[in-house]
Length: 364
Figure 1 (cartoon, rainbow, N blue to C red):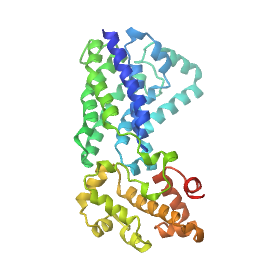
Figure 2 (figure 1 turned 60 degrees about the vertical axis):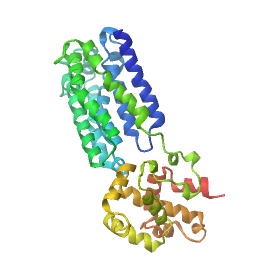
Figure 3 (figure 1 turned 180 degrees about the vertical axis):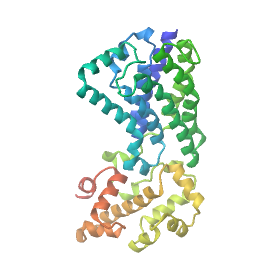
């Protein structure tokens, strides 16, 4: 029965990874990183009494740093699009990157010792092994539960700031509650005995709720990819260019107001899109209503501003603006100082380069 349970739990996580790959939203690759890291952890910490050294031989040491992508992955998955595209967002993934750098330097500078450390790790001698010199394997493995628990707390805080639906809290809260059990499982893996619970079988049984929460989150909570990102099926008509997650917006008049701005003149766009405060003051809605809109769509003011300008740019191109005007003039018409700025914003919003979009959908 215990063996069947382990197989079932691992299979559910693999299925969750497959579904996440199919259903993940555009710009939500961090969610896929999170699920992938969870699956790697489930393989790595599978009971050695059932599979022997099979998984450790395959996963050690190259997949150990992947443990440190779980926390940043789940945190990045709830961030607004603009935050994920910020170059500084890579800071969250530095522990994983540094881990791979340590492995490479160890192999490059001390190949003999590297192979000895690989042998020691695959024999489960983590306490004195230093694959990630100057840190011991014990430090790296035991640090993983603390690191991910910190990110679960950050997720809860971020969801609260975004005033997200209650169902979004289940995953980070469920995994945070399971963190002591995960710590105990890793402790047993490293030291050979649990810190709280001595029986590793019970440890793994207690992790079943966490497995079910992850599976439920992938299947029920996460929406499928929005149609606007499937560029092969994108309509050339700008009115079919929809704002992300509009189905979640309760105040439909906000959507109508955004659509009206997408047909505004150059001067109107410049007047409304100067700053976030200016935009809110000139709109018929208050700050709280706009914050609810950003929370419901998981976007930001910067994304909305770019969306309006890009949708207006597509409308102008469909009307034949470029037959007489230049790309520089089009950029200025929608509020960008240079063509390069327009190109960058276009790719960020549409997921395809502007010249490619024109060639595919606008040029007969």
